Image (cartoon, rainbow, N blue to C red; front, side, top):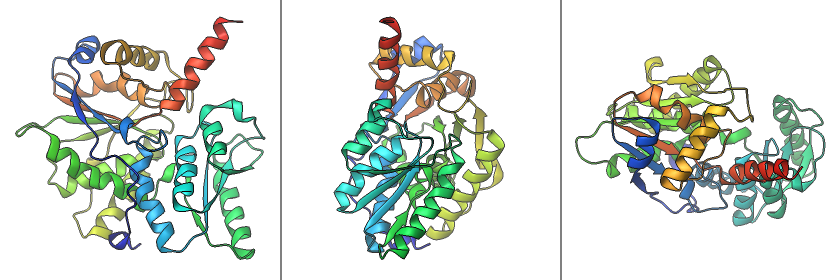
Amino acid sequence: MAVLTLARLGLGVLPTPLRAAPALAARLGLTGALLVKRDDLTGFAFGGNKVRQLELLLGAARQQDADVLVTGGGIGSNFVAAAAAGAVHLGVRNVAVLAGPPRPRTAHPNLAAALAFGAEPVWTGEDDRSSVDRVQQQVTAELRAGGSRPYLVPRGGATATGSLGYRLAVDELCAQLPAGTAPTVVVATGSGGTLAGLVAGLVAQGRPFPVVGVSVSRPVAQVRERVLALAREVAEARGEPPAGEGDVRLVDGRGPGHGLASAEGRRAARAALVAEGLLLDPVYTAKALAALPEVVGADPAVFWHTGGVLDAVAEQLTADAQETT
């Protein structure tokens, strides 16, 4: 993997702000200072944290002279929607492999956005998310056999190339933090690419503070194995020290399961909204915020807001629909 030679496309508005959130800290019962890293403001296609990954993934696609970007996920995937916009920016086709039977674009704002950006949907016919992985391979092989030059990106952009975006984000955060501070960084973790990059970056920086991932969709043991492997790939490609098992810290924040809101997450999202005007989606970022008080205790913290604006819109639309029935 030639990470070191990748061209990084300038999609994001970086650095994103690091803001104090005292009112939210008070609502959560925190005694230590709380800062929010606003990666909901990366500035490209409501992509949130996915924008940092796409800058590297699309750079790799350009280097390989790809003419089709093959992505995949569920209908609510933030990555699929942002990648569709990225394909437009790159000037290539985008085939999006989506789990389940065909759905109307009104099924989720992220699906509507992906289709509006020109994504060509291929439905797996199976609700199991793992069906996406298999069908992606099939679609990629078919495209290649037909003379196209596809670039396949696994679900969530969780590759070492994508994770490099968050390895670089650690340098950005370290430059923003007040001198002498050592907060615990808390971030929502799905497919693991974001956390892997953060782990790799903190190890490279000499472990100035810990990062804790809140697993929102997968068992902790499964996520830990994936994150450690990705972090080590990033470190190897950059010639930096590898992460150890103790560097990957995770807690279980899944609640009722993948893609399902938790009561704790909804309360946390409401607290963020009324205290600081922060919009959190209920199935990803809100679950991480709900776990933050238990994770950090009395220590200072950085909550890494990974975005999910259209998921938050979907939640509100569903609530409005329920109120009118």
